[in-house]
Amino acid sequence: MKRLSLIVFGTLLMLAGWSFGFEPGWLHQRNLTLVAPDWAEPPLTIAVAADFHVGAPHAGLPMLHKVVDQLNAGSPDLILLPGDFVIQGVMGGETVEPSRIAEELGRLKAPLGVFATLGNHDWWHDGEQVRQALEKRGIRVIENAAIPLPTASGKLWLAGIGDDMTGHARPEKTFSSVPPDARLIVMMHDPANAPALPRSTLVAFAGHTHGGQVRLPFFGALITPGRAPRQHAYGWIPDVPAPTWVTSGIGTSILPIRFNCPPETVALRLSGKEKT
Figure (cartoon, rainbow, N blue to C red):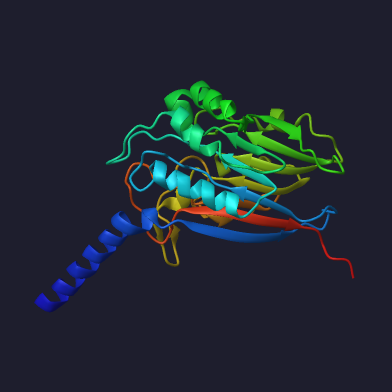
């Protein structure tokens, strides 16, 4: 029994060391492909990063610099940043001003542009300050609105839904100006709004959940914040009108812990159905 107790204690100690000391800083790039039968344009590469929480342990400005380099390295056509740039209330964290975060994110480059929505932590800090800092660096913030993207066909639109947890989400307003024949790419901070996606959505992206931060084998996320069900905490989520990827994000909140859920950037290649 003593030997078994030592083995159990040692295993728990190693798991704790991994979850607090290593995995939160182990940045991955998630490469995805999606075939959309109605997409008739050349393939499109979309890069996504969410939940930066700059100032959380393992997610300081050096991590942000690494994230920007990783996103730029893929030469994406479009970059989306679905919110939570700042952090409050994480053990061992520190406050980093939005202007410093935006200065680093200003290095991002994509021909179709770099766009963002705001998350609950951004609003809890000062949503307007975060917006102004990002837009000063050339990152356009889209909240409950949609805009056309400068493609050859002119039928591709980008929509951004406001944050659900802080009461800023207005899906009906978001899609009200989109032409009936347009194809949509959607970003939202919280996957709670995924059921409101129009059928014309090619692909949507969300963050907010951090994938649960702790994901147990055969069970998934232990805890998810907000209204989204636990099954919508990470990856391609089921039972919504359009393909929606929920990213695990970059930083952490409350506890600086990750297990079986490392931080990630996302690069998705969108293409049409090949002709036979």
